[in-house]
Structure formats: structure tokens, C-alpha cells
Length: 159
Image (cartoon, rainbow, N blue to C red; front, side):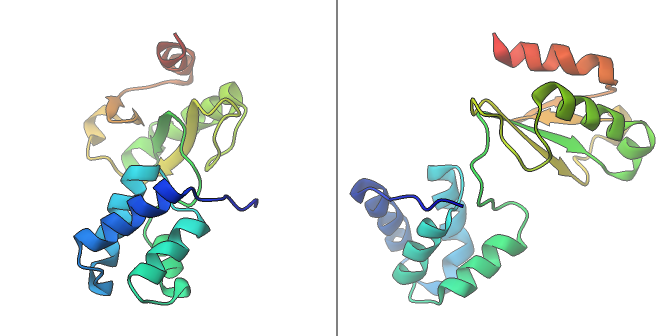
């Protein structure tokens, strides 16, 4: 994985977020949430700055980022697609819907399209079991899906 060079303004943004939490290591999860909100993801270089500012080992920050599924070290697409694979969705065909997204976007789970428009992930439950199978694109929920719906959902965000 290629390293990225952080600009001075990005470093300042990270430092400002850390400072807003008084550079307390106990606030690391809140800091990481805000930093990910600012950058969209948490590459190693960002984690290093956070660790330095909060006076904690980089390995500890990495452990937190890799443990919690909310955090990502990969950039997400402009339109992140999340397929629910919870029990209700799974038994109603979510895997076939996922396979169709993978086929149409030509990416696997955890990847982003080359144009940066879409990323694909799975989650366990979105709390809309009555609409199973469910897909979220950003914050928008699509329910009772079949593989035939996938093309229309992608087209909605490609226009």
C-alpha cells in the first residue's frame, strides 16, 4: 500500500481535532471519529499524527482503528453501498443481491470503484428486517431487493 504525504493543512486539521479534546488519550475514539469525518478514512499517516498528538503508541491507535468496524483505513466511495447480511436479509437473498453489485461494479467487498464513485461493504443488521433484503447507499435504505433492482440503484447515483 502506497504511503500518502499529508499536507500541512491536513496535519493542522488533525492537530486541531486532537486539541479540541485536550489531547487526552482517553478521547482517542472521539478523536478518530472526528478525524475520519474530516478525511473519510484513517490511513497510517493520519493514525501516526493522532498517536503523536495524544502521546500514545501508534500500535494502540492502529489496534483501535482495526478493531472497530466503523473505522476504515481505505477511502470509501462517494456513494458507499452497504449490503445487510443479517439473518433476515441473508435468508431472503441478500447474497444474490451482493453478488450482483459485485458483478455490476466490478469490485469486491471492501473495495472502491476506480472512479471513486462507489464502495462496497457488508454489515450485520440495519434494523429494517421487515424490508429484507436491505441495502444502504449512504444513509438511504432500499428494501425488498432482488438482483434485478441493482442496475436501477446504481443508475440513480450515476446520473
